[in-house]
Image: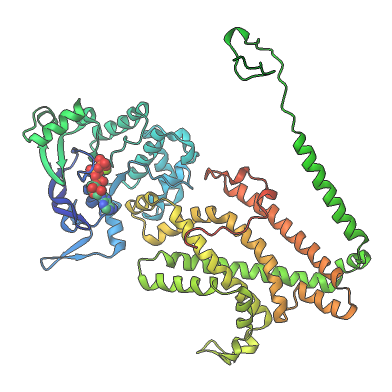
Length: 254
Length: 308
Ligand SMILES: Nc1ncnc2c1ncn2[C@@H]1O[C@H](COP(=O)(O)OP(=O)(O)OP(=O)(O)O)[C@@H](O)[C@H]1O
Ligand SMILES: [Mg+2]
């Protein structure tokens, strides 16, 4: 399989606090990678570094043929203008824990915003495509509703459709089900399972161990800003080598 | 140690519970009737005092529709509208600058608010009116080259004075409004590839506008009233017109009452407009404003969010 994402030596500090301590990661096309780890271990920060919502203090991320935020010139990384960075960011779909839907736009309005504004699609084209995507996540009937009228699970499915509308090379999920009532988790995971089956490349930060076990091709366990364990879900989840990973897993699996 | 049985009590034992069809006696509120009665009496007393006082109501009625007054009211409306537009434009411009990444822009916006919110608006009006003393000529190469007194007419001075002052208040309001749109939406827009400008225009500002609409309504009402200050710089708006009349005919109170009637009419119309505007824009944003009746909000002073 060909390489889709390659993170090289990612470091991130907030003040004097080093949150990420040099992370390396490779994701191939069509792969589903789940990132597990205790709260505060830097999972969200890592994901946000991958799409440059946070600028890493060291290292870089290569996505499908380009280095995020930089051009390689004469052996050095030259920072790109913001406009070009945004174009790169639009190739990575991001789904947030708290949905972050545009409150003043309808469901349909949320989904067509990116394609119309960034890709310059006509409204008719964008709407036709958006309705397909809303159909896919089971939200077509709510196209005219506003976010405040939706349940958490519905909001998250709309957020997934909004990210998919940019036809991203890779989808990033940051704990997409953590803010949901337990009975709403299933509908979102179902949409994500369908995406995985369809061959979408996905990096998923999650606390859903069962989802990781069933859907992930590989699992990564992060502790204190480092990758402590990486491999097939069966091996990592049932037989971790690292003692700290073992104690973390025994806590979440209990 | 037996205590006397109270006539009624909140404690009820299960055996004594009444059936579902039990009668309910509502509380009476004799206090409300008494306080209401007192206020009505006071109102009647004040009303009578004015009715029999030294006011020629016929003169009030006569000048209510006098051409000079109507034209003056027209100027009042025009000044208010122009100053409000200027104030809103400045408020948005400086409010956005206030949150800029560039510290110099931030400082400039802070300076603007500091100066124009920190000095009386009447003083500012007088300074604009006399600006020609500082800059005798207005000269912008290729555009204008005129004497300042010809450019800054009383009307221009009034619009500048009121508008620039209002802008300094609205700057803080806009800053608060932008700050209250959650950061997550901005990040979501960025991950879709939208630039900062697109995010501001399409995501942040529309929601800000909705949040600050009640404040803008109050600004409009306040502006209508503050425009009367322009009377001091010889602008022929309504109050100035009224003054010119009573200097001649001596009917001071009568003409001031005429003004009061028109100002009240104006602010009432604006309040009603504000009510419907808020209700229209409140559609989805889950704001409670749509529940509020227009007359409940109409005496509120502008609320300034953020630092005082
Ligand atoms: N913007 C920020 N400024 C300062 N510190 C931050 C910032 N964002 C994250 N941190 C710190 O970085 C560390 C890692 O945070 P991060 O959100 O990446 O953890 P996480 O693994 O996603 O945790 P959780 O499972 O609770 O979401 C935490 O100690 C957090 O306090
Ligand atoms: Mg997190």
